[in-house]
Amino acid sequence: MTSDTAVTDPALILHQWLSPAFPVGAFSYSHGLETAVASDQIRDAASTRDWIEDALQHGAGQADAILLAAAWHAPDRDAPDEDLAELARALAPSAERLLEADRMGAAFAGAVRALYGIDMADAPYPVAFGRAARALNLPLPLCLTLFVQAFVANLVSAAVRLVPLGQTDGQRITHALSPLIAQVATRAQPGEVDQIGSAAFAVDIASMRHETLVTRLFQS
Image (cartoon, rainbow, N blue to C red; front, side):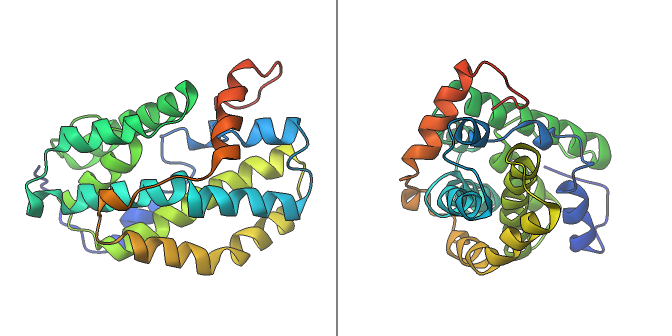
């Protein structure tokens, strides 16, 4: 992968990539949270925080962080990119979550190709993100911290619209989870895919049940 763009401020690049304005469509996915609200599993700030904390620590939050790091390390380890992409797809617990990862990844890869001329194929979102970050020599610790924070922020944003939850309460949740965000990002840095595991069963089941939810605002 090559780029003619000289990156002088990694923080600016990453904040642009993870901004709601970057065209990946993250705002249209709730990761199953919409089902949990409909079934009254999430009904206030406390239950929202608990749900997002589980998704972050025991579900896709930590898995996606490790996948990102593995993709970033892949050039040094000579690991086949297609293997990581297939692993990311295999980890999706439902059809909608698979579409979420693939569609966000394809949209992200397309935007990065257009902006930086990077030669990279479509892949699930965390893999595509890690590849692009490595191609532009962005520091992995910063990539992971901001990526994981964006994962939390997107779920909080969905909860604000669905619960409903006040904007300030939503920001309190993100702030309260900041230490865990840092821990998940730090643990993911080696990119050891053997460390990926999931015990967020309620989150996964909610994503499956979302496919038959009668009224839906989100695609997952």
